[in-house]
Structures are given as C-alpha cells and as structure tokens.
Amino acid sequence: MRGHGRRPALPVAGILSLAILACIPRAGDAQEVEFTPRADRPVERRLDEFLERADYAVLTSDTVLRVPASPDRSILVLDAAVRLATTVPGDVFVVDGDLFLRPGARVEGDVVVLGGGYYASELAEVSGEVTYLPNELYSVARTDGGWRIYPIKEEPKAVDLHGLYGFGFPYYQRVDAVTLRWGATLRATGWAWQPSLEGELRFITEQGEFQGTLKQYWYPSGSFQFGFEAERVTRTNEDWIRGDISNSLSYFFVGDDFRNYYGADRVSIVLRGSETASLQPLLSVEWEEASSKEARKQFVLFGDDEPALNPVVDEGETVSLIAGLGFQQRGADRRFEASVRAEVADSSIAGDFSFVFGEARLYWLTPGFGSHEVELFGIVRGDLSGDLPAQRWSAFGGRATLPTFDLLSFRGPRLVYGQASYLIPISALRVAMIGPPKVLLRAVAGSAWGPDDSEDFESNLIAGLRWSVFEAGVAVDPGGSDPTSRLYAILRFPGDL
Image (tube, rainbow, N blue to C red; front, side, top):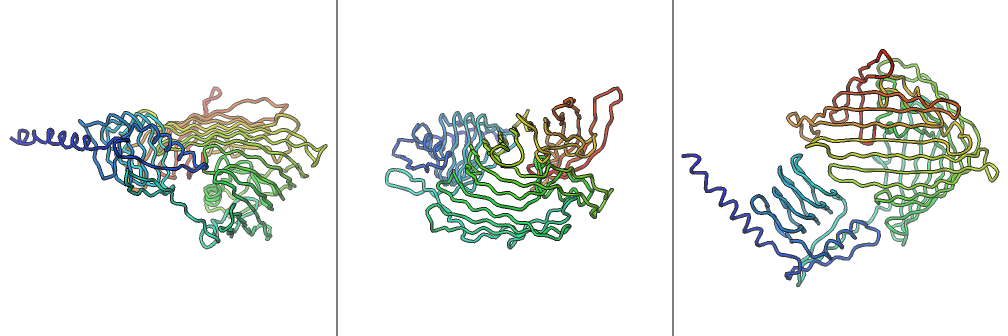
C-alpha cells in the first residue's frame, strides 16, 4: 500500500518540472538582455558573446530544474538561485545569482558565475570550463524590454593597511631568525590612473637591522600597470617549494627550512599585466647587488636545531632585462597555471655578470575519475648561455619534494623537477568547512646539476593521506638494488608542493 500511495509523486514532479521549463522565456521573446562589457575584463567579453548568440533561456526567479524536464538550450540566470539536477546541452551563465549542481547534474558546456555563488556536488559533471568569480560584482535591473546588467565598480581605499593594522605574519628561518613586518598602501583614488605607493618595513632580529620595500605603480587600465620597485631584502630561489608562512612554521616546529637565501639591494622598472588576468606579461629592467648570508643556530621546538649551511653567492652587481609571460585559468574544481621567464645580463654593458637564464613552470589541477583529482607540477630552470652566478642557482630535496633524500641536497645552476599526484577523496569522512581526507598517490623525479656534471635523476614513489593542510605518508626510493623508504609528515598550505 505504501508503494502504491507514492506512485503519483513522479508524474506530479514531472508535470511541475515541465511546467517550469515551459515558462522559461527564450532570448528574443521580449526578453532582451543589455550589457556593455569593459575592455579590460575578458570574462565580460565572453558574457557579451554569449548574449549575442541569443540561444539561451532566461531565469530570473528561484528555480529547480530536474529530470524528466531538461532544457534544450543554454541558460542565463539573473539575480536568482537555480538548483540543477538534470542535463543542460549548452552553457550556464549566472550573474548576481547562485547555481547549485545537484548529484546527477550535467552541463555539456561552460559554467560562468559572476558575482554570485557556485555550489557543485562531487557527483555532478561539467564538460567545459568552470569560471567562478564571486568578487566581480554586478546588479541586474528590469527594463521595458527585458533586463540590463550593470557592473558595480568598487572604489579602492585611499589608505590600506596590510595584514592586521599593518602587521603581517612574522617570518622565521635560519639566516634572519624572526622577521617582523609592517606595511601599507596609499592610493590617489581621484586620479585617472590611480597611482599607488606601497611600502613595507621589516626588522631582522638576527642582525638587528631594518630592511624595506617600496613600490610605486600606475594603472592605465585594469589589465596593465607600470612603475618601479626598490628594496633591501633577503631573497630566495626556492619559493616554488613552500610559501612564506608554511616554511616559517616548518622551521619553527621541526627545523626544516626548505630554502636557501642571499641578501640583495634591488631597483627595477616594471611593466606587467594584472595578477587577476588570464594572460600576465612582464617586462622589467633590474639592478641587483647580492651578498652572502650565514645560517645560524636558531630555536627549534622539536628536532635538531643545527641549521643546514646556507650557500655562498657570487657577490657583485647584476644589471639585467627580464621578460616573462604567465597564463592562469581557474574553476571551482580545476586550476591551470603556466609561466615562462628569461633574464639577460651583459657585463660589457653594465654589472659584473653575463648570462642568459630561463625558467618555465606548470601547475595543473583537474578532475580524474568520478570525484578523484589529478595534480601535476613541473619546473625547469637554468643557464641558456654564460655562467649563472650562485644567486641564480636553485635547490630541492627533503620531505617537501623528495622525502627519502636530505634537505636541499640537490643544488645547481640547472634544475628539473616534476611530480604527479592522484587524490581520492574519502567522502564518508567529510567534515564541514574542512572537506574529506584524501588518499594520496604521487610520483616524483628531479635533478640539479652544473655544466660539467651528470644530470642523474632521482625519484620517489609516495603513498599517504592529505587532509586540509596536513599531509603524511611513506616515500620509497625505487632506484638501486636496495630501495629505501621514509615516513614523513608536513603542513601543506595552498600554493605549496
């Protein structure tokens, strides 16, 4: 009897879904959507091209779309919440609204969410690209013939204190001990190009001295900026391994500093694209005077507090031309970043060193089978011509890269490193705001060498568990007749390897 009593529910649900679908207005049926894209917003040009095709349905009220009713075209959501549990045979654009992809939902085109919310089930599928920009704000207004989309331009603050009242997270490492930071940015918001002046003052507790950075930039458009930078700073070539905060915490707790350092006085003139744009060109002329820094014994909470040696650099001046190009593309469940950079120095013109240096990086996070994830990273850097000074060498090794080898045991002017990870979420153990733990499988290989050395590559195979910022596992070195293994645990913040 219970089953018989429930039988009418399916036809009723189907009739309601079909009724909702039948009421969705088509573009062009007295439903004109007006929008003027800004030249410096590539995503707005995509929205404008989507509107020009006029092959979409417009949703302006909260709607549930589910089987058996399926749209026969793309969907445009304006100032509404849409819950999707069926198939859309095109794109879904959301402006100032929310999109919920329920289990079984499928979008055969792209998903673009501007100024709203995007919430996707791991059992939903998007065949195209997901572009989620919640901080790009828009308003939707009713007009006589349909709707009008207006960008909301946020005026930047005239005075912006960095961090907490200007104080940034203190850094901790083996050459400077604690670095205390205070910074602020001033902007002339009433000027056409809104020039900014950014400064940071740093106090180095080990040497008892001050460092600082000063940047002055002009912004002719949202996608281009130019200006100059001047600083006295402690520099590193290993920031691709760990960020400032995670490296500081690692050194404080267990004495692992994943970086080498040198001191530098630096002045540069810079032209670059916006950090939020898909394409990010860079061109700069830079003067740098380098100096060596000595590693010292610092307090470490657990483990050996004897520091690894910090390499000596080739002290002198470098005057160089730097050109680069970056590309990034991000979605709710995928991310792609790639960059190339070249630096040319000629001592016959200026400075003490002559060389051509090149670097290429790649990071790719993409869905695997079902709810699984594939994460790839690679970096290649080295001398293309001439002899690189030691301040352009790089290093790796230790549990952030090759856990079975000693910390920073691979170092040279030429470096190749790559890793491929496969992540399997354990959905049954999902925790709110943290997410599920993930089984981690990873293959790693790399080498660093000089012009007269052999480029012998070493590798690790890793199996473990990642949960939020914590990662632990066992690494095996498969090379040789007697493979070695090592347990490791590490904090891993966004942007870390």
